[in-house]
Image (cartoon, rainbow, N blue to C red; front, top):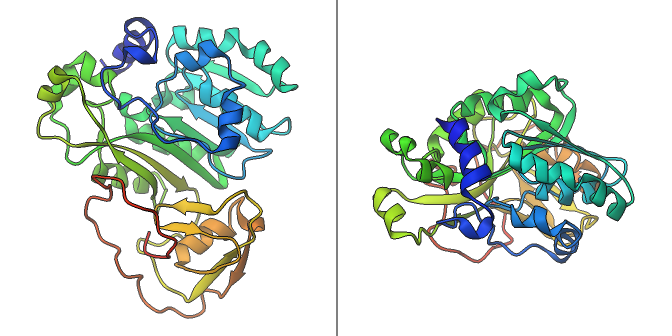
Length: 345
């Protein structure tokens, strides 16, 4: 039911973002000025068919090869294509013909506007990426925006993403999560599925699936509770709480199950505009010596971020686990002020 309903809901039922009945498939966070400027360069029709729930624009991607899982009408793909530049590339994969037609129809328009052509779109289901002939370890970054919840075999998506990433690459994606396992009978409801609720992963199951695929230390970047304004939808999902969240998963060897303390620290050089946010607990200001756990050290030292940091210490001496590495619900029920302090992941 999942694939057929997704194609029908996003290809036939919805004619644009205004037709959505919840804010699950909407992006509410305000993008920084550079992203707003890039979005202004995306064709109006492409933007009108956007159904993402987050801002999937990781830092430092110039020259990167990017794969966009569930690329839809192409908004994220055309946004990212500007940021990776002529030396980079963006490959979009989507299963809905109507969405792909919009993306393809405006490919030349965007190439002319940007001054280079670096995008391509493939029709396919993201749970069957192995059928698309994509080479192992061929992408620096994989993004996805509110699509993994729509597929049945989510484990297959994470396994394929790990295979397709280069060592040190990352899966950076936004999706919908639940505070408990969603009742199975809700999957049969086409509206609940199409609105990204019925297929939402319980966050604990997501953590297990990601780790089983080889992503040892999932990092939560942003999250927000979802509002369900439609009374009929709200009644059907009563008892569940849903969240939109952005995670980053690194393909790195040697990451540990806990955040272990080796007395290490980093100093951000300020070479990416603004402060650098690795995840929800690591907002790193330029020039500060910032204590980090061993896993965070690897995420900065063994990825595309290495040139943006100075590194202090090594793994020679272990001081135990960072305090606060719990297993409770990681999302906030309401927005809280960011703090520039180090802490457990």
